[in-house]
Image (tube, rainbow, N blue to C red; front, side, top):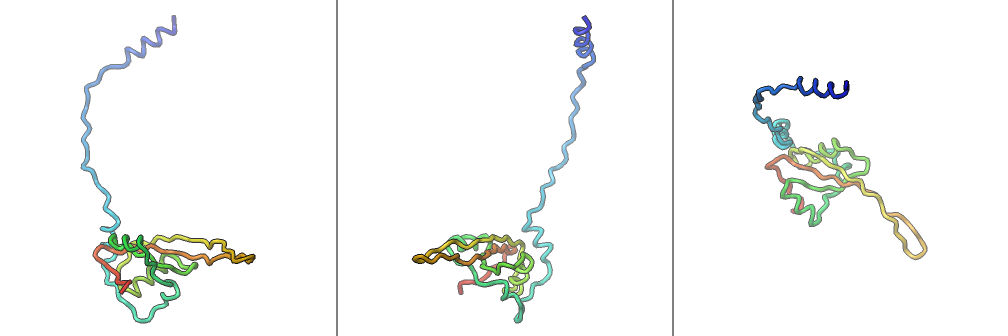
Length: 142
């Protein structure tokens, strides 16, 4: 009956301990990125007359969706295919003199097109969604 004794021993070892309350620490909420941007972009952004950013920013992307995003402080640009996030950020800050918080990039590949018996490909391009610091605005459509 060695098997049953093992179960009895385990049952005896478990003793009921008084429940202790653990002290809960005050929940520390992480600060949103927009608040961090205020701290990081405390320096003044200067609009420059002569900048090489025109190689990077090709044109603003004006659609219904981009018009809705402007309310959130996000603006869409068609950019050069070789442009990086840092280059785009610097170009927007130089051209418009605003503080940029974040840059997201979308690569869009060209589609096949056919005219008669000739087949080709439309050119690939890159879009950048630029998020500005709270309170900043761009007047693109003017």
